[in-house]
Structure formats: structure tokens, C-alpha cells
Image (cartoon, rainbow, N blue to C red; front, top):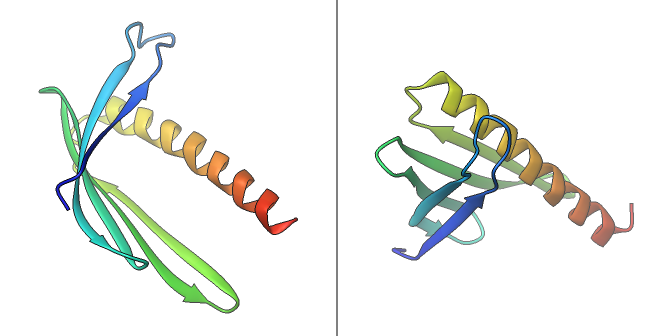
Length: 98
């Protein structure tokens, strides 16, 4: 816990300069849970949680991102997580041979 890392959101229409999202690990309980802060300057201070549980012959991933008080920021995060989780799903499918 306490490890710090960043996400860089590239520029795009409506976000000409991109964003730097500063994160800090708050909970790390391998292989069950990960929680980290997600902060963008004075604009956004949220929490991200992943929880894993066995499900049949695989793993169910629970994801939560909370703390939004601005709808545009929430919509941007939904888009970004969709992109990142979609990429992760494709990597896992290639590794499993599907």
C-alpha cells in the first residue's frame, strides 16, 4: 500500500490537453482486492475498487469507481474504463486461446 502511479489520458476533442490522473494504492489484498485513489488536480478525487472471486472454473471481476460529483467527468471515466477493460479482455482471450 502507498504505491503511487499515474494514468495519462491523451488529448482528444473536448480534452485538448489530456489529463494526468494521480493514483495511490489504498488496499492491496492479492489475489482478492485492489483499491486506489484517482485524483485529477482540484477537479476530481475518486476511488477505484477491484474485487475478484472464484466463479465456476474462472474468476468474476467486480469493478467500482465512486466519488463523482460532475456528470461529464463520470461519462469520461466510463468511456476510459470501457476502453481499458476491453483491452484487458482481449489480452486475456488471447492468452486462453479463445
